[in-house]
Image 1 (cartoon, one colour):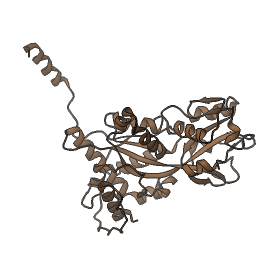
Image 2: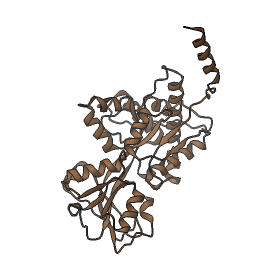
Image 3: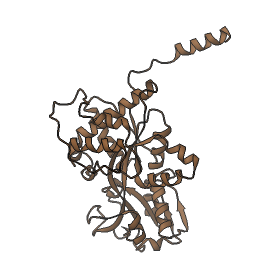
Image 4: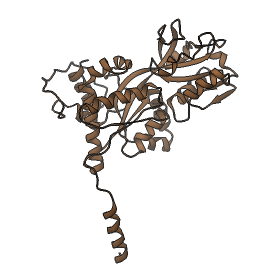
Length: 349
């Protein structure tokens, strides 16, 4: 190699900033009024109380979050809808590009059910009434976009126009009469619908009781009085939100080693402070069942490291170990069996 090139490389190395001893911790969530970002902030607050800095990022939603965990540097976590996982898993079998996109992505924790909200003008009484109408389905790369598209296709409803705009833009457009309805997938209660500007005489949540959809999604109900404009209960469907991570290999290099440590630390924070999150965080924490793993996806090994009984952070009080409740794990991978054993030891089953 020419001496000049060697000198240039040496100068470049000198000018590179010194690597920090610990990698940044980042989580991709969703829009500013959604549930994802509030859940992310709850986790970040718990981490901060343990001396860990975690940055919460807004995003378009599930698809961007999934791909961000796979491709974006120092992005260890993203919240994703489980139907997005099913969609990707289905197409991965026959599409090499999708297969590459999901390679290495792992489960960190199952979270809560998210309700499919459909806010519309009062004269729209059901999904069938969206035929030929102007419907906002969320921005591209969002979970709302994918879920709304699947719901409309499964219900065999063809709107006259599908607009890909944000939820805040959708609400403004609906109130202005520019659209007839919009979808929003978010955990109840969603801040967007707490607005006093939603006129109960003009708009309502459309019940979703289609039998085909209730076979694909979880049937549920949005209780009466959840939102200021809502008087009675509303039939709905729900999809589970999942915290995703990446399968870092600490033997590979320093970046993987530090990222794995970050995942282990945050996993330990969530599991050891789970009761506090349920008591002081977003109401959806009370519905989280940490054993409801989506089928076909494995827990990250770095997650299991953080759940191990011997794992400790400086902020941990001395605690006696809790015996695990036996769980049937015969049909699971070893990583998922280990996860269930350790979660049961920490939070019970």
